Length: 114
Length: 409
Image 1 (cartoon, rainbow over the protein chains, first blue to last red):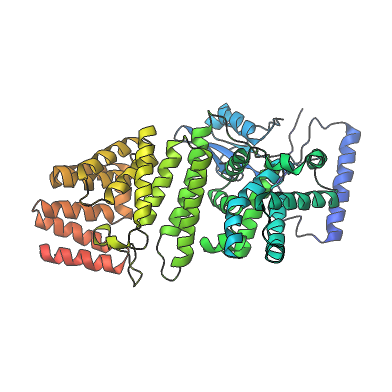
Image 2 (image 1 turned 30 degrees about the vertical axis):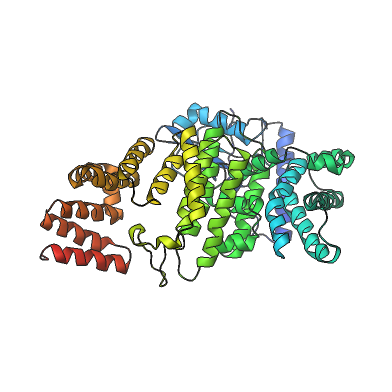
């Protein structure tokens, strides 16, 4: 079976930690990644950039419109797709043309540079 | 800043920022280095004299500041290091002789990218293209400076993190993207044009800045009728700015304005531009500008105004446009035809929403009913309009009209 983990952080959760707590959390994260590595079970993993760098494509009166910010309406998360294109204009063009946008919204979120 | 330096700042700021943004691919670096170069000019020019080519001087100093910073901060992204290496081999002449117009256009389209919130587009455009300081941008929009710093910072971060490209849109995308740029310029103007007592000076500067931006768009895209139309519209609206507000800060209606306080030169330039824009294409801004030009003439050519509103209503059938069209039709075909237009507008969903939110359709209906001799209906419409009027003078005026027409129930 394949599963997708979708991590949701509470707003400012990491910023609220002390330096020591933050270091401990990051050490735990590294250890967890090491365990996943040993199990060789990760198909694909991708840390996302902050939600305020997101752009959302949605339908307004049958026309695809582009809005600054993450998806914040009603909807059921249906798919995760990671694409590699030259810039945001190309990504938004694909998102606008995707059938997924016709039945809801597509949030276009940059991946955090590794 | 001295006046000479201010003129140079106005002319050269966007050129320097845009060239650095292209060379280094980093808006923060471009903005900071340009600001440092202008700070050096403020310090050195009064002592050493203004250099023979101030633009080239500023460009060289700004480029060197940027290179210094890239050298100092080894953590900068790899593509900047590439830019750095290629730049070291370029001479100053090559740097300044680039396609300057293209650089500023790229920067303008980046600032007005639809993936940025409208507020952010406006703030970035004023800061990076207009060269206003963050404090000035904050003042123009009644926003605390700290909030404006955050807004601009967040927008720049989004541009780099989300990969918003630094380029002029293709011809297929251009109409939509240009409309976005023009909307930003128009919103800046509107912010300045709303009269607010005690803040008129700042507001006038905001109007002037919007007109400078509109001029820049026309200079960069001289064949676009929409850009020309917007510049014409702003010039014509702005020509009445001083006559629009009385000494007490109240708004003065067009008919009651002191025409001696209108800016004749701006009207002439705006009217000529409106004609030129209309000859190139019947765009919405061009039509609005032509209507504004008609309103600057005495007597007003109402058949022309009604025809222009008719054309505008086909492009933009918004309740505000349809209502204005009815007002013009009343002058041409009489109040019965105008009333029919307003009543059919109010039977639509958008029209009904307007009637709930604004007193204006009720003022228009009341006026048409009064002219048709339907006194009781007119009085009722005036009372409704008065109840919804946003300012005391308007409320008094409308109640007075109602009283003259018939008894209150």
